[in-house]
Image 1 (tube, helix red, strand yellow):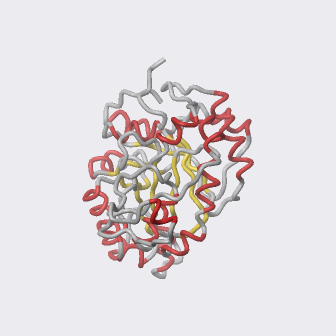
Image 2 (cartoon, rainbow, N blue to C red; image 1 turned 90 degrees about the vertical axis):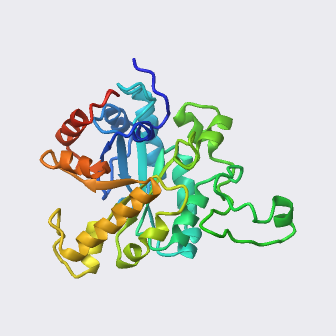
Length: 315
């Protein structure tokens, strides 16, 4: 049995420069203990659970994660495959995200390894997302000029400046259930559940989907927010907002090609992995271009891509 270096297999691979491949759809996933046991043997590096359009089922998610762990470890030696959940809230602005931060607390409390914020449209929304997923004792990239705890108790207010983060807002209470899934103590979980690569020891992978004209216009500012680990262009909703009733695939019209280039350039600039659909016929070209999170749900795509990158970690 190989000895993994991290809890989160997706982060372990990204840190090595390897691409990661995911399975799971956007309209729901069978969330039962039995399905978790079956999915522990997946060919994918992480499992995407779509709650943006699928049911917000926390009881099912807890059972599913328990099933993954009970059937583990994986062939790579990890306790379970990584699980990333698409949250229902849209990241249209900071207030909208903060009002719905309870979703992140519920999802994280079940023990997942990452969350995707859909329809991210402003940097403020992305900052609120990251802050909502962090414990307040993690201070990397937090604005040092913000009021200290005793000042906040006295009612002093402040807002992060200069592209930095505010203090994390996740509280105690769910570390017991989440730590059991990760296979660590509660204290260890609270240290390790912090966004990577902002925290090099962090095991939490946070992503954003830019899928509206507003999100594309603000891509540079959004993807400069500390704490994000991956991002994607959402061609389905973006094309619909641009008037395309049928979603263009790889052969994007000019305005979507421009949007893709902008998001990908911002990912490169900020050290964020770019997510995109690929197939066996084009995955090598995508890898050469710099795509590092591969959608497509086909094992053959992963086999071709892994061979091209000479991947060492077992599936």
